[in-house]
Length: 411
Image (tube, rainbow, N blue to C red; front, side):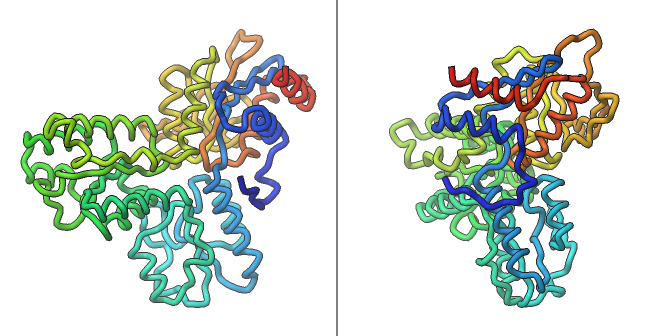
């Protein structure tokens, strides 16, 4: 796997050593049990896989290279590079400006850009329409295009499905940058529809079975289908792809549900004529992060901490999984923990920040799960661990604990 050149402050003294040891012992990621670090007053279960993925590291490397190579030019990002506030804050501190916000609303008008400007395409990719605008201005969009290869894989699969007369069903969040980009690329070759969850898939199933009228379909999915979408003909042959940061298990559940709908309507012998096998579009990093989270759920911990941007889709799904079993807090960094152990927990259901206590009264030792999303630097997770060690007044030597972990995992 390629080694990326990213700023050293994204690295970490704790997590990097834990990851290096796990990679050495288990290069093919067959073992998703968490790593265990015992600091006496607090014990951490650290996910087998989390943090920066290939696409994120690639995007960061290209962004900083753009800064180095163009000291005298204006440099813009279409929108947030990734959904992490610290990464985006550092990029803007270095002079990079955002053209749009995460919802696609304009911050800087296109008319302000010139052919001499540098525009970085974020890891989520962008729409065909925006590519056209930038090319008309004269901007070179290929040189600093950081679109994740796994997002492009979904686009290529969609193109192939479209060439075979499939309608593209996109499992994703309608307003997410990646889903908007995938929809835009998909409709160049096929009809397309965005569905966000199994509930919407079930409504779609009722349409396919003829239980719901076309008018009801068009009202229910308003704004989420391609122009001229005709449910009666466009749902005869479908293929499911996904926003790569969605729950892989949910994408598979949706696909299997729609497959059963097609089998019941057309028979198992004719199923290949009506729904494509698209398991190859699932992102490996999303799968690994989620598999590692299931590994965390096998532990007997007191609580779970998920670190990452509040608007990060893949991080939110880790919270959804862990909160099924544990008292789970979702924070951006150690700055969300005060000196009294009160955390600013982001509630993914209400979309509001709530205060919770990290310190359990009467507990001699807390067992804490910790993980992060694919857009969170390991250094930020390190900061959270160190803040908790301070709060728990741990006297353990960090280096010695890591050395003991390496010895124990070698036995």
